[in-house]
Amino acid sequence: MIMSTFKKIAITNRALCSIPFLEQIENIAPKVDIIILREKDLAQTQYQFLAKEVITICQKYHTNCILHTYIEVAKNLQYKKIHMPLPLLEKHYQSLQNFQLLGASVHSVQEAQKAQYFGANYIVAGHIFQTDCKKDLPPKGVDFLKEICRSVSIPVYALGGINDQTEALIYDSGVSGACRMSDYMKC
Figure 1: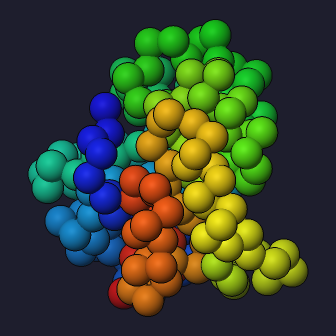
Figure 2: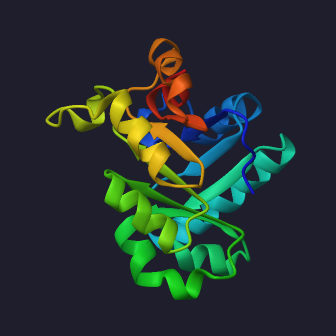
């Protein structure tokens, strides 16, 4: 289970890396608490191969690795940690009972409550600040994050436009940690 101290979470995106992806994972694994392997463009067999490699690296550094979306890969690897979009959690929640760590992405208080109802151990809420990933959508801001944190009893992690400066702005929101993609994939 995820502890209550502020967590640093890397969400992967191979396309952002300027060095080989596994080398980048090797670089960031000792610096973060959790790596969410979010490579949704891969075929299941490719993702499974990559997941084995990333899990091995994470274990070396005692970093939590959480798979993303690929439920069958997690089951094939007998790996009990997965994160998914809320619609997938709703669709598959009955088959996810044996997972020890189950997370979901949410964008509203109602979605946060629904994720908790369907068994999520934690949620990722976003996007909090302006980000290149969501250029056309206005950020939801720190007040949104506070509202999410008050609405559920599970850890909430902020996502979207998080860097050293913006991370400091969320500490008093009740959030349990911050997710970064660009910062961890490009550095």
